Image (cartoon, rainbow, N blue to C red; front, side):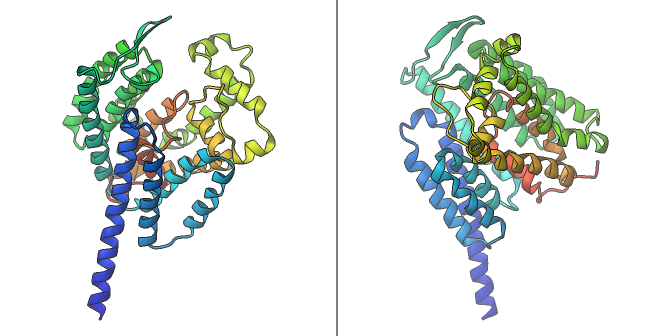
Length: 358
């Protein structure tokens, strides 16, 4: 009898684990292949069914009540589903090896790159161009030249997550300027270009052992510092002409968003107005889930960096580049492979790998 119960539990654990990995793969597919998907609603519904099955197969935890509570926000704001899916994915993937997630993400991304390039080569996707103040920018089938630029940053991050030895990191380190320049030349997108170099500089700092227990708390508070800078810039956008021009109007849009938000909007979020361009990760969390979800992010980041420092030390350059890019791009507020890995690291740490104490 005991053996039968043990076998049943083993089967349930097996199915829970691979159902969770299957959900993560769906997220990667939906994120990378969105230019081929006219209506993502069926995929989103299917994804949430798989997530629910994985939750049902696992052990119930008190954190589930918080996730279910946040799901009530979708009644008021459907965009809150993104954050709910992120939290749910982090929960069902608990104790999953990061290397598995990194491999699934990179494999799906490479398949997308091959299909995407073939589509452009065969003219199934037309590369439209646009002259701007910086030169000729290529859309490469996307609705925004910045999206094409973010493909380069995604490539760099995806490769970094799979680097498991010193040689591979050295090769990637010297490859970053090449990848960065290629994608910048065609997209003219500054944020992914800067974020790529942030990752490269952080790799150098890590090699020089400048990331240590003395700088740990500073790194843990970086999102708070960035958020305060965003709030200052948004509330003073009328006088920050140069910064507004540098961010192609994003500072002004952020200021207008704050002017439109009511007390209730600040508390539980609001749908982003169609006439405002808001792709700042911090403000998108505020819009999707209000100040409550924004505080959850800030607390989770600080707590995760402090508590799991030794576990996630090898991933600090990736984490810092993501929060840096989040200043003007949506790098951790929408559901994607890299976003899930980012949140997984700051909430769960890296339970399958224990690095040496730094």
